[in-house]
Image (cartoon, rainbow, N blue to C red; front, side, top):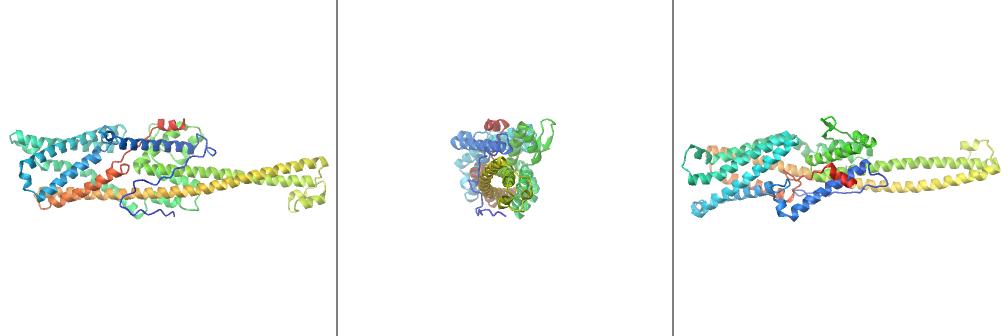
Length: 489
């Protein structure tokens, strides 16, 4: 088994270990499977670099609510929540200071700003939900719609509460809207989805912690020395790339095996092959992250090149053996003009030495010339075989390095999933504690609950800022078939 370098930190490294390798044009033509996969990798890498450059070069782009890869929801909202919980914690120690006019005005303005931010976040969730429903992602789309509606309601209530208390007379409607428990109850309903996710992902996380999940099992299988390259390629494809894709001809979702994709290449259905490879890497990014998706494709390219080098080496070996046999045959035929000379040229064990054919003197020169041509072919075949052996060794080292990188990236993904899972678990428990405390009118635990929320939001802020491609709502670098075709042009 390949042993990855251990990362003792709680969070994965910011700069992942990704090993890239160009496709050897001498081995693969432009429309071969390795070349098509390399075009997909280049398009995906360029898309990621483009997103990163935009994010870090323009603050407007990074926090624009119109951008799908913005930091508005994961960062701004988290910062506001941090500020809210800090104020709540401070209030526990300086309750008298909050009775002053300045403190009341500051709290009111802060609440209105928070309501505006919450409302904007809700609108963004509604927009994303509509987009997901258009993509036929019904479950996640409905969740986003529900979350958006709740956030808009909570935001409007937070904005309206200080205004209604200041300018409107107290009546049943005002009392209902201004009830401090109403936003808590509405926000708590969002935890239903979090708890459902915790329960459904619990078995997956358990397998991850034991090291028996399909990703880790696949890496262990790929590390075996007694497994052929073809078997490793199929295993890698079935583990990471075997997702259901919409078939344009039938209109139904279909799972394409590695045999199916190679068959499409053989039948020169390059357009459909590009569509499958593009959709596969986008789906793999959703299931894992962009770094794992890129590394899986890179490793598969290396395996395919390794198989191609093996096949060419086998063909060269056949040519070498054939040339050696022909050389012996021509030497025997040339020496057959003199049976004694024949015994000296070739051993008696060769069947050709038993041939009673006697060549003429004119034939002798011809046979010797043919034997010399065979010698040249043998020398050329041997030189090419030595080159192929060197390529095989380099390719094996590259595959080991890429497998090591993939193992490390998968471990990083598992670490992040573990942190997010326990964060959601802790947030759910805090939400339940908040509801119980509000129902029982217990105020003695407010500081502890707010301190816990402060910790969870700080962890969330740290992940959202420093690991945008690994966070709970990660940045996506989805590509299209046109992006891949641009690389093939």
